[in-house]
Image 1 (cartoon, helix red, strand yellow):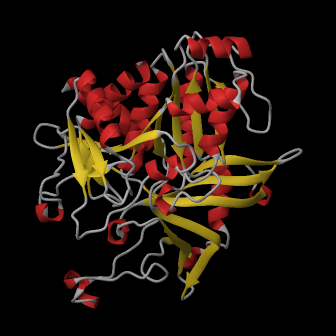
Image 2 (cartoon, one colour; image 1 turned 60 degrees about the horizontal axis):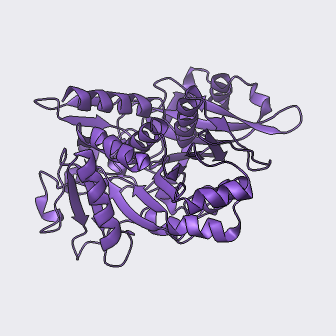
Image 3 (cartoon, helix red, strand yellow; image 1 turned 30 degrees about the horizontal axis):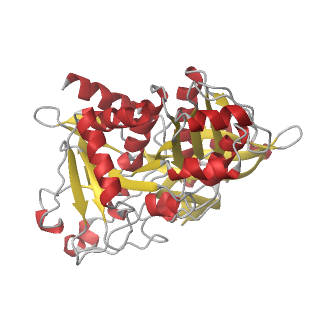
Length: 443
């Protein structure tokens, strides 16, 4: 249990330092750079060395890292002989996503109400449980774009202050509140920011954002800012068996994948860890799983090793992708919502996800591969399928493999209250994922 709690605490610390997708990627970069990984740029040529680790980012919110086996050397003969000897068998990939449901701050966000209140104009990002954002201390994080010396640059922003609240309507003013409430995002969900009757001027938010970013307010050209809850993750339960935290979906899987990847030495495969943005809104962006980011990166790795297209396709054919995005556990108050026979529980281990219409990419072969990895790692596994009369969501696996045709399995870690402002998971399951991914990356 101590080892599991250590992994859970490290995961919660990672989440606390990642209030936005941009911060999550920056924290992944920090982990990799401490282990001597080298940053590559998409707009420049790549030069790689055997046994070394590298990473590339897109839009500051997606990152793909890879480490080469020590037995492959750039050059056509070396690449050919390495493949012929079976020393490079393909890519071993784990993918997760950096974004979570939230509210995005619009341009010109401040508005006044009756010359007293200042609200922020926001819009939904992803499918959150709206009511869970009410009556919580909130703040703003993300990035700003500013004019540098010769180009536009971005700066991370985290206004580290209890800054905002979305107040509920008192039950005295809506006696039917507990009979069901439909929230209008443009009316009910705008956060209270300031009391303008106390002399606050306009554009106060951007002044505070500029200070947090370390730039002048007039230098800010645009921004990608999101609300986040100030509640910190914690371990709870009679025996410390649960974790409660914002953004468990999907930073729990991001942390597990990055930790296992960064501490593993590849043998026969090129290890890859991909963290995509915009999964919560369909992945259809240049930095999402439905972009060419993964395909481009894998091709450029092969190109750097002087492998021709035939060799690249051989490597793709021998590759495997674990798509890691959290899964629904059986709910203690609503067990009827779960499928009758596929019923994952908190602390029950890695969840292998199935879907007859292929919203999840798992098939018999990829599921068997994942089960074997779990057995080798000594960690339990469970199965998940939607009730046949309740439609579920989609994830990264089938989207990614539409661009890179590799065998893929969709998995997750079991959790409750998915897409709530704070979510609940099991304290053991992060460690289970780390150990399974370590076995995978060490093959």
